[in-house]
View 1 (cartoon, helix red, strand yellow):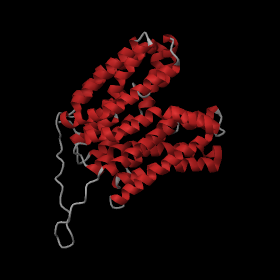
View 2 (cartoon, rainbow, N blue to C red; view 1 turned 45 degrees about the horizontal axis):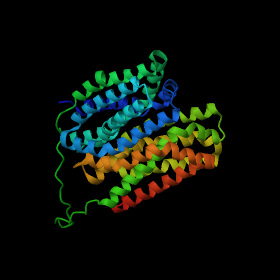
View 3 (cartoon, rainbow, N blue to C red; view 1 turned 90 degrees about the vertical axis):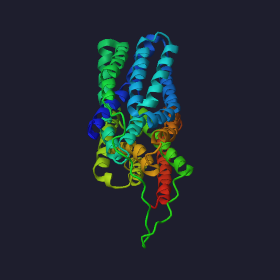
View 4 (cartoon, rainbow, N blue to C red; view 1 turned 120 degrees about the horizontal axis):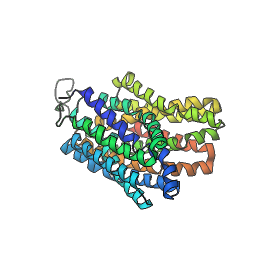
Amino acid sequence: MASQWGVVARLGTTQTLAWASSYYLPALLAAPMAVELGMAEAQVFAAFTLALLISALVGPRAGRAIDELGGRTVLLATNGLFALGLAGLGLAQTAWQVWLAWALIGVAMGSGLYDAAFATLVRLYPVNARSAITGITLVAGFASTVGWPLTAWGIDTVGWRGTCLGWAALHLLLGLPLHLGLPRSPVEAAPSPKPMLDKDGGAMPARRPPGMGMAVAISAVFAITWFTSTAMAAHLPRLLEAQGLSATAALGVAMLVGPAQVAGRLLEFGLLRRVHPLLSARLAAAAHPLGVATLAVAGPAGAWAFAGLHGAGNGILTIAKGTLPLVVFGPAGYGQRQGWLMAPARVAQAVAPVLFGLAMQHWGAGALWLTAGLGVLALVLLQGMAGRLGDR
């Protein structure tokens, strides 16, 4: 039986592959693809947006399948879907074939990215999933660091078509064998709930389980934070230039976000692993608004602090989206519930680049106050949840 950290290493590697060959692909692939196929570059990104929307629809069904069949079966299927979609992209001759290929990749994303990996871990290790979830995000946090250089090298060496076919081959030659090595069945039993005792040793009435209101609050928090994360990923260099930085300085500051995300995850793995995930999530949600305030007060000199705070908060929130629902609702039905909870976040992720781009057209650098305000709203929602759960 594979050890827990062996499973984490496998899933961390396959998640790096999945993210690098899907989410991080259009940034470098869109331009050469559009030129050769006679498409507008915006059309390629629109096809990618379709993939994100499809992933939101697929998520709940994929989560339910993991609850019933286990993650190994579902993740093996996603390797085939990724390979088929990427091969279709590499062989596409017309715009509609590009849309179809991205639709297939969207199905794979909805059933093969973080939510599926988290659900797999919760099914295998319902008692000790938090540290395993953190471990996966630490490894896959380097997906862009690995993926962008490999994609750029592939485009320079074999062209964008060969690059897509190469990523497809990696899903079959690397991803598939790694997923084959995952355990077939749960290796850790979930504990039976124990009744709480009063001061005289008698059983106290069980606390009412979290209801729909709590689910809506969690879903809203993740939709807000994923909107901000994707908006910053798409527009941060240009946004920093609007704050008065040179193009070179803006790019340098923007590159800090990735290492800051990993630093935030290391903080979660170390110091914050002993606190309730709600506290971690509140600290992380406060980071972006605090960074915006620092930038507003210090001007361009505060850009480094803004990027560091935003990145660290985003890194911790990536873990919280896996651990918070587990702590609040428990491991039973985790996969399907996670699919529903994260569906609005995937939609927000899909529309964020366009909507925040429009905000920048109207307000320029002031568009940051939109995401700061959303961050404060997320913090308020998390604080309300803490009150309902006993001020964690």
